[in-house]
Length: 142
Image (tube, rainbow, N blue to C red; front, top):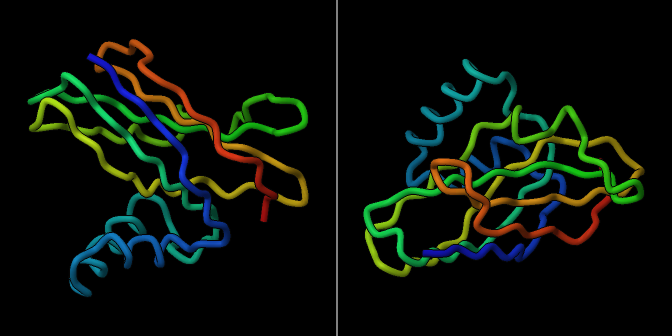
């Protein structure tokens, strides 16, 4: 059993609305997801970063892993308390194949500029065992 994460890109200045529109198959689904987001989290006009992370799973057929993210100050290498994995819910990834590969579009919490940051992504088993970790290239806050 194993997993691998690789950060492909971090797109800056993406609104929650734009992200929901991209991942929804229809306009009706976009509208439903926006209503759900607004009810749970507020505005969909907030700008932030959107990370693209390739995840490869081996040996998790009919299983599940958790995908975490957090933001770090690039200068101090310290994790920011307001954007940790404790704030954002885990993304749960299930697999129906012995080996599976997918790209996750993960919206990140907005961070203030002009400082530099990086995002760290972790893949863990359901019991919390760390399988892999990947860091993004540094990016400037908005």
